[in-house]
Length: 180
Image (cartoon, rainbow, N blue to C red; front, side):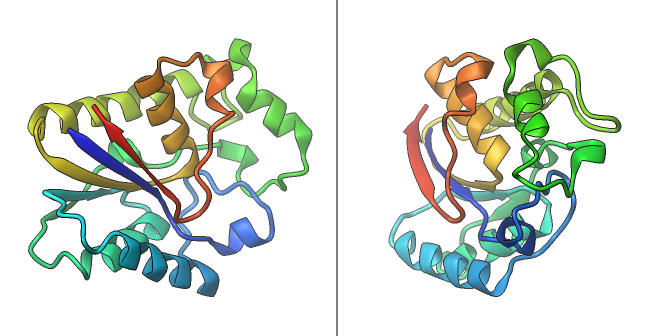
């Protein structure tokens, strides 16, 4: 499978530097422009399917790309939803205790209150990725998702440990191509 992975466009939470997690927010004006620009960059690639997280920011980005691919089916998969950070959602990026919490390998089985442990999040993303690889082994698949989702996909494809996963991050509306 050829996989194109796109991170959604910029949101208001990104602009004010707050962790979004599973909070369902749309794109900012800048994010809408980013989505259109990414759509133009990908317009000549023949996708067999477009897959998106069901969260609004990814859905809007996927729909912008899909305008150039009107005959390509689009599906939404919960497996590519962003990780729930529970009570930490909305905290500012500068809050280093959050960064330390999500990046330390010894914390893979724990989560903020009402949040999702990274080990469970990784399993969810991995199961969704495996499902696509089985259904579309010789196809070109576009997945539009989130920052932490992109880290887990990159971690799995490149055989990285959890502590190394956070060294990778797609910027808003950036994309990467993998051969799986």
